Image (tube, rainbow, N blue to C red; front, side):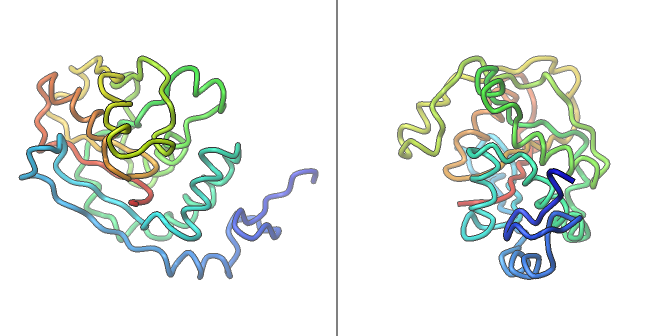
Length: 211
């Protein structure tokens, strides 16, 4: 009664977190695509899947989820994707999901990992288990969005480490993050897996949007 569910886009009361009008607007932005990097020696993963281009409505939603303490926005995104699950059937080839981690400091400040909130919903849709404690972020770093291309690459160099590799050996792995801009973050996460003996061709990346 005090905090009723509303559409996170327009703010009107709506039990499904997304009103029909805004659903139609979001529908126009939806464009599930996959990019193949199997022959790209600079990438430590085989392919990248994404649902939106990072612009307009979805951009505002992700920014609010990530930086403006509005974790409930993940419900809007997941509700929309729930009705699109037939479009990404090929994601079911993956055996496990790994979420790009945030540092302990950032987790404490924000209270949640926005990528993990989305990943949990996708895990349910695809019936793929999330495997935790595989990749950890060892130190807090400035947000990638505040840096230029060169700074972003240096910013995340060496900050991730892989653990419990035996849990993911001989598995197809899907790394999930919120936004793909330069790809440095997911590439670094995939790199620590490859360095532990995981085949690049068994690693895929999924983000909500691509810049």
